[in-house]
Length: 237
Image (cartoon, rainbow, N blue to C red; front, side, top):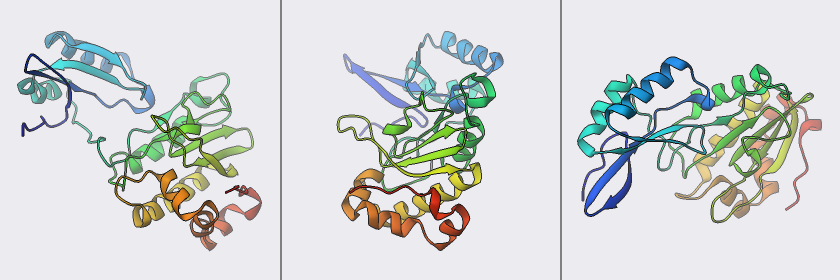
C-alpha cells in the first residue's frame, strides 16, 4: 500500500500518476492579504490549481508526493489533521463583526468551538456550523451541531447531515448565551464520545437511542441550572 504524504489528500490517479492536494487552514474563511499572497506564491511555485472549498478553505491541487512536505514548509504552516473520524473545521459567518445582517457574534463563538474541537477524535466525522442570523449562510440545519444567532440569543440544533442521506437538525434549545452554547456542546460531545459507535454520526446515534432519551441524558442538573428549563425545546420523535 502506498503511504499517503502527511498533510495531504489523494486527488486522483491518472495514467498511474498520483496527484495530491493540501488545504492550509483558514478559520471561518477569514484571512488577510499576507496569507493570501503566501498561498498564491506556493501555488505558483508548484503550478497548483487553487480551489475555494465549500468548507471555507483554500485547497492547492496538483502536488506530487515529494513536494508536499516542502510546500507546507514554504507556507510556514503546520498541517491540521481534520480528516477521518474527527471534528472537521467549524464553519462560521462574519456575523456582527462584519455583516450588516448579523444578529450575533458568530466569529467569537466559531473560534471558541474551533479552538476546542478542531481535529478531536470522535466516533465519526463531526461537522459544526455557526450562523449569525436566521439566513443561515453556513447551513447549520444540515450539520451535526448547528448554531443560529438571533437578537434574543443563540438557537442550538443537533443531528443534521448533508451528503447522500441528508437530514435536518432539530432545535434542542434557544435564547442561549455564548457560554451556554459552549457548555451545551461540551455535554453533547462528551455523551457522543461515550455512546457513539464507530462510523455513526451524531444524528444516527440520537435516532438509535431516541431523541427524548438523548435530551434527558444530555440536559443534566448542571445544564438545567445553568440554562433554565424555559430555554429547552420540545423535540418530536
